[in-house]
Amino acid sequence: MTSSRRLAAGLVDELRLMIFPVVPGRGKRLFDDTAVASAFTLVHSSTTPTGVLITRYLRSGEVRTGTFEDVE
Image (cartoon, rainbow, N blue to C red; front, side, top):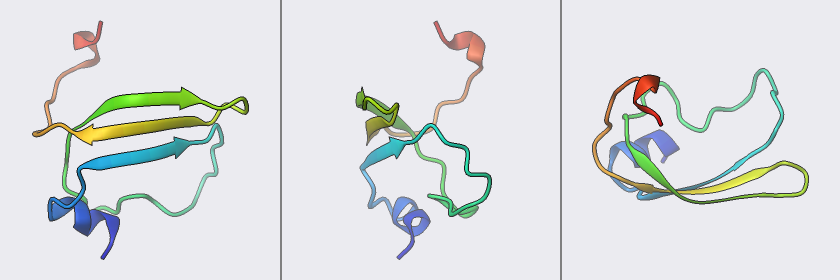
C-alpha cells in the first residue's frame, strides 16, 4: 500500500520527516498526485549539526485554508 493510500484510508496519524538542505531536482515523491489533503501540526523539531531538520507532526483534523497574511 502506498503512502497516499494509507493517508486516504485514515491510517496515518503521525509523520516523522527528515528534511535535508539539498535540492535534488528529480526524485521520488513522498505522496503522489492522488494524495488526500490532510492537516498536521508540528509537535517537535530539531536540527542536526549538518543542517538536517528532524520533524514530528500529528494529524490535526480538517485542512484549514488561509493566506500568509494570517501568519504572525
